[in-house]
Length: 221
Image (cartoon, rainbow, N blue to C red; front, side, top):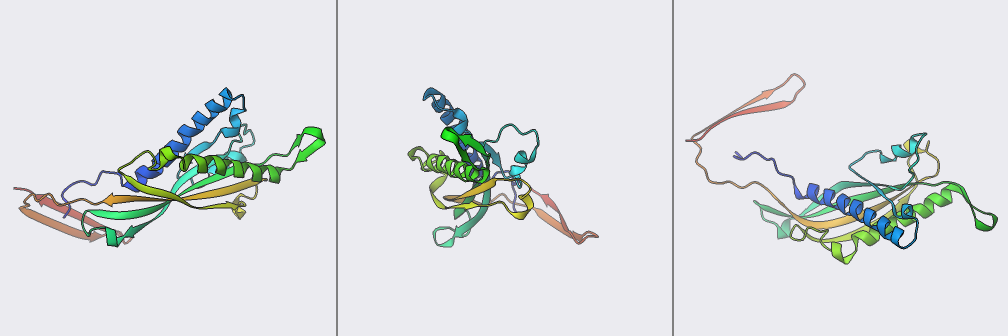
């Protein structure tokens, strides 16, 4: 029986949060640099969220003013590499983290009597958001995502642009893009400390809805 309370975070959770923190931090930095360069800082603005199921809802609010691209960082899956792991403490892992971008296009007139349609604007904004994110994540200062020693390496596996699914077609001129980032790291599991146990009693019960419930009585000398 495991003797210590499992109250730590696994590394996939730490890495996911770190990716979001990097994007939020660098977005603010890019906006400041844009001001210095005499550019519109809103062109570099990204609104970063974590593990949201429907972040695009921000665009469905009638009174919405901020139509900056929405970025949602979420953990997708992990592959455990048995050949370079051990059966007890350390599991070599490759995790997939998705960075989803949602942009809202707006029809607008441009110089010399030109016009940009809402769907074209959405496509251009999606490409710009992907460009900013890719350049941030693949910068040399983020080779290890700012957590060297935890991350062994990372690579952008794919970039996919997609149109909204059926459930969000009520929002016009919405475009999405996904950056899939594969990250190498280790996960660790609790180890036995070798403390002697005098007595263990475990009782297994089944509740009315079929849930298995176990209670344990552990006594140390």
